[in-house]
Structures are given as C-alpha cells and as structure tokens.
Length: 170
View 1 (cartoon, helix red, strand yellow):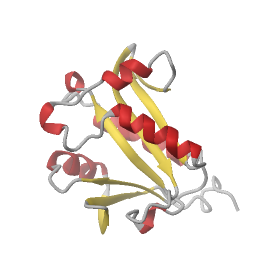
View 2 (cartoon, rainbow, N blue to C red):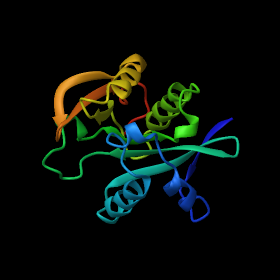
View 3 (spheres, rainbow, N blue to C red):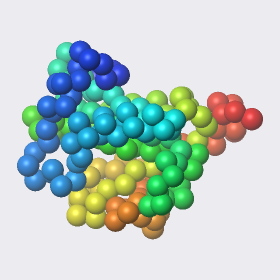
View 4 (cartoon, rainbow, N blue to C red):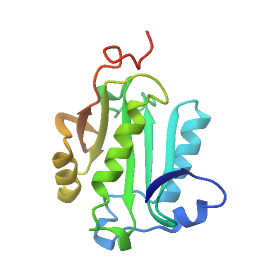
C-alpha cells in the first residue's frame, strides 16, 4: 500500500541514497540537495514539505512540496499564494510500475487540505528536454502556462477556489 512519511533520522540516509536512472539525472535533483534546500527554506520561514514515498515497507521515491514565494527573481508569478510540486522522483527500480498517478493523486489531495494556506493552483516546472515528465504531467491534467522558472517550463493544475468550497481562510 502506498503511503508517505516525513523525513526522519530513521529514513534520511535511505532517502538520500535513492537514485533515478542515469539518463534521468539531468532532470532530477539529488535528494540530499533537495533536503538541504528544504532545511534552508524552512530556516528562512518559507514552506518546504519533503516526504518519503513507500509501497508497504519499501522506499520507492521522494516528493517535496512548497507554498508561496521564496523571493527568487526567477520564480513564476503563479508561485504567489499557490503550492508547488518542487520535487518528484521515483527510484530506478520502481519506475514503470504505475506509481505516477497514485503519487500525484496523493499530492493533489494533500495540498487540497491547504496545510500551509489556501491556494487555487498546484504548479511545477520541468526542463524542456524532459519529454517523459512533460507527458506524465500533461496526461494528469497539468497545463503549460507559457511562463518559465529559470529555463524550465511551468505547468499548473487548478485545485479549485478555496473560498468556494469552504476550505480556505477568509
């Protein structure tokens, strides 16, 4: 059964050692770097939500979410007041097994709970050369906006208006 756990001293090393396939390395940040970014982001009082992804007792991947802006000049406008799927990686041995959709389902469900505040969108970015990632996100319902985050393409998924469904703050 798929489940998500916070990063702790008990799973930190295993998460850091998880690797993608060689040809994917240009598109996926190292998990140790991602966790260092999460630590620094939290120290600057911004939101970073890293999780280990498990299938039963087996670590299969890593996901990290963010909320709002970080003050980076390359951030897209959509970042303000919205969630970001900052990182998503599946270990090489666990790819091609149908995990993408249930992981994205969990991410969307989690952010619709507005753990950091109300939002209308979940956004992400990817390298233009990452055709596989682009197709996975497109099939899920993410739509490119024409914006860029640095040199990466920005795509968004509408979560709905939190004021309309009673989950958001006034």
